[in-house]
View 1 (spheres, rainbow, N blue to C red):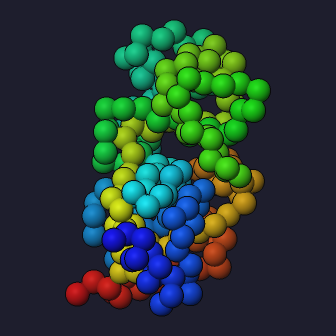
View 2: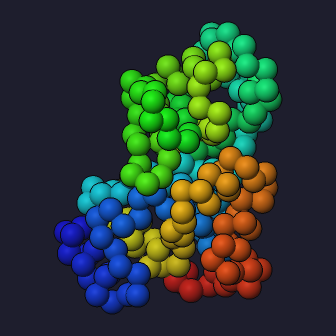
View 3: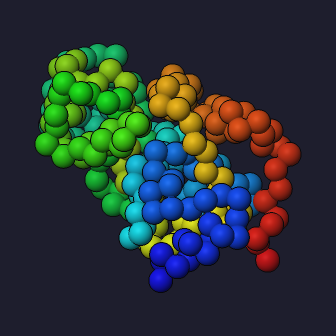
Amino acid sequence: MPTQTTQASAAGSSIAYSADHLANQFLIAMPGMVDPNFAGSVIYLFEHTERGAMGLVINRPTELDMGALFEKIEVKLEAEPVSEQPVYFGGPVQIERGFVLHEPTAEVAYSSSLAVPGGLTMTTSKDVLEAVATGSGPSKFLMTLGYAGWSAGQLEEEITLNGWINVPLSQQQMIEIIFNTPSSQRYERTMSLLGFDPSHLSGEAGHA
């Protein structure tokens, strides 16, 4: 049972896993990560329950930019600075579906959003893109295609096997990394906030 696994992990580890422990945190792929979808990735985890976890890779820009995306979805892009912003690979699940990770917008409600308590907001409805197109949407956002998903207990097991480090940061630190730091520097920047030098990490533990 996932709950029993969670409790056992908490008892035998300095990291306390609870059903919602990892939501609103970053996951950093360890050097031993062999899955090419996730090697070298930083993920913002927006949901973590007994049923599993969901997140978005925030440092894997694709060759598609927002201008081309808006042409595909037939929305006229009026806010020019947005057009050259890259669309990101958010993960290998539902890669044809768009996810917009953005700063909280208390005064604006989109039709399909998940506001992570103390963190960011993830919107999947087209209305947020229509707002961005006219310059009235969130000023800080990251557009991804696809998401990363884990079944019940899977993420906890991968962390135990040294696949990931979970990184709790303040909302302001997350905003700074996701929206104000070049994508090529987000991995190192997140590691530095933990006090780690990525070159000193070993990926051997847990990989027989």
